[in-house]
Image: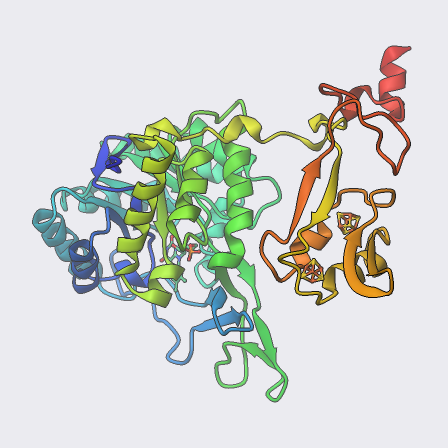
Length: 437
Ligand SMILES: Cc1cc2nc3c(=O)[nH]c(=O)nc-3n(C[C@H](O)[C@H](O)[C@H](O)COP(=O)(O)O)c2cc1C
Ligand code: SF4
Ligand code: SF4
């Protein structure tokens, strides 16, 4: 059976699944339930400075996007950091860590952007004997308007400065949690590294309005007739998180920096994808809030079974294996030619592929053959775009088949070339011609 044990910055956990800083990690009773259920670690709900705790709205704080089957696809919240007194949180963190010494206990922090505030909170948190801290530079609502959260995460110089203070004032590992509300994620990640941070975690939530209530004419969630933007998360944000993770993993300046992957992790497969892009752990929020802590059973069993099938004994055996295969468009192989092929035994003759290709692609799927309703790809028109595969309601009914080198592509009349050739040297690329001259 595969070994799921994880060592991230010296923080050990029995599996790579940590609960992200959010309501599931807000208090002792929740975290105890989570650890009993089998979660490998938690990042405790973000703590603020000593003093009167923040105040949350008393009305709805969540919104969602649902699929046609009412499955939750995207989740939105306008919640702030913990609204419980600092001392209560610290006592509970200490108690839970003592009760579960084998689990990762990381504490999320967000305090005003001055050195004294960070020094003070770090000293207090160290006394809990937790395993590390995560700096919340990501929250896009409520706290950012007060100069914290994503207001810091959007300015690489601030990230570097605060990371440096934290490394000076604590012996604990420091993880910088990044905001996706930025154009190029590499800049804040590089800043975290320059500041001496031990790792980055990403993503925090994406600024969003999930819907407008057309009766009240206000964004949802609606508080007495008004709404404000919130933070988007859940399955819908996973592609954004994976891309940002890959950008950091393959950037020469941050390559090799430990990453904790967050954003839409709902199944073991999502976790495996983040790990394949180099993540040391994954963090989960929305899936736990939607389905409860027991999903950890399917996550660990699924990951372990898949690793057994593939012959991966430990997480290190496949960590980062997908990163070298992430490239820029200009390096994709232009000699690689594919055609769509429809499996007539699986086809239910719904016609969606035909309509999609006819109206918006290359008119490459016939809907009639010898006077009968039948869907067949015309190789002489097919550009291999894959749209039909994505719109077909039957999984694996349409597949993309590569053409053999040496055969003639009936669309272009050209022989499919062997080997690899990309845009940088293509004759149609004006820059390639300039370089050649
Ligand atoms: C209700 C709610 C509250 C959250 N509170 C925090 C927080 O206090 N600190 C923090 O760093 N992230 C917070 N997050 C963001 C999550 O930790 C996580 O980064 C994000 O939800 C993406 O993961 P997911 O797609 O698994 O939900 C919160 C998310 C939700 C939904
Ligand atoms: S791959 Fe694209 S062009 Fe080819 S049949 Fe499908 S939709 Fe049409
Ligand atoms: S979309 Fe799929 S099932 Fe429907 S006609 Fe096309 S190939 Fe057949």
